[in-house]
Image 1 (spheres, rainbow, N blue to C red):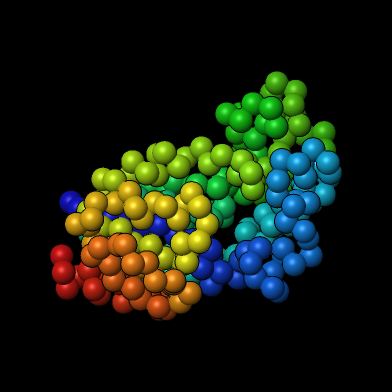
Image 2 (cartoon, one colour):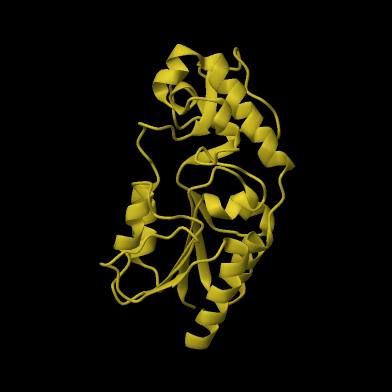
Length: 229
């Protein structure tokens, strides 16, 4: 069975109503990103940071997977699929994808602010000042903030390097280090990018571009794959 790696970005979740900090009408519009999504922000005003992510978590819990999530989950029937997502929601899992690697953390989890390997499922709850990990440190969102290292990037690089097919959806490949993952795939590997804002890459071989949003473009990508494999 061929190994198909899906790299998903914010465009997939946007069609379920989840906005990103780049959306002018999104939740981030109310905040300066430097005040809610950096280690410095956490040290300066943890109450504000927790409130921001509690609101984002509520949005995620009220959102539903869309047809793009379902189509990606359905690829499991024909391929050995790994989803590498830049998104912090759980919509891939809720749609049925079994093998999901989160690059930027998960909004449905908390972790120790001191011991990063102490991670807890929130089960729909909020994080408040005074909520402590088992070692007595304040809990924070299990999110990779701006300025922090991406702990799963080396795992993602290895997964992509072993791919037979690479499907990139809902990302314009502007945010690093995730954007660099396409360069980890063998030049012979079939690559398909689905994103209406895609900016042309001149150094990628065996690349097909579908300039559509995820719900429209993924069925087109699947049709293309079915005709080739």
